[in-house]
Length: 167
Picture 1 (cartoon, rainbow, N blue to C red):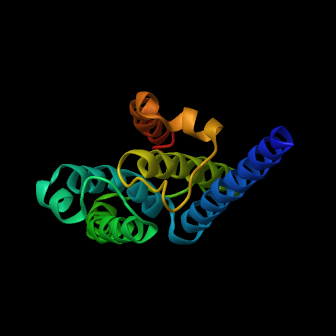
Picture 2: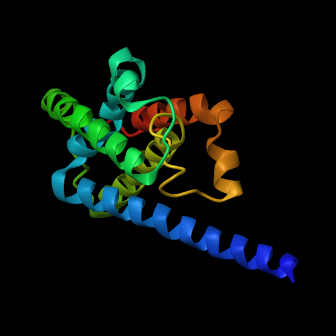
């Protein structure tokens, strides 16, 4: 009986992971379509300095603590990360001037790829920068993709995508 419960739990967990990831992709896709390519590119790029400031500035860790004891602690960390992220996003957005192609199909493809890229960086940062495991724990398959050994490659992959979509 326990075996069947484990199978049902893994299937339900995987489906909720898919829903969350698809929702993030859809939100970033819509953000790219409505706000423009420059906003979505600056969103992705702004995550890097925000993570650097959040992770490496020592007094944040003293205030927040090393680990997240409760879901409320995780939410506080997310809010502080967002407060660091927003001004950085506004500054970087003022420096970037790129727009989608005039082709409607290419615009949708680029927005989808950038939405997927932004989602992958967000999920990678949710593992490494703001550990959201107390708020939501992804399934083992997603865990294997975004563990610390692969973190570097997710960061590099987003820049490779941005390089190919630069025009």
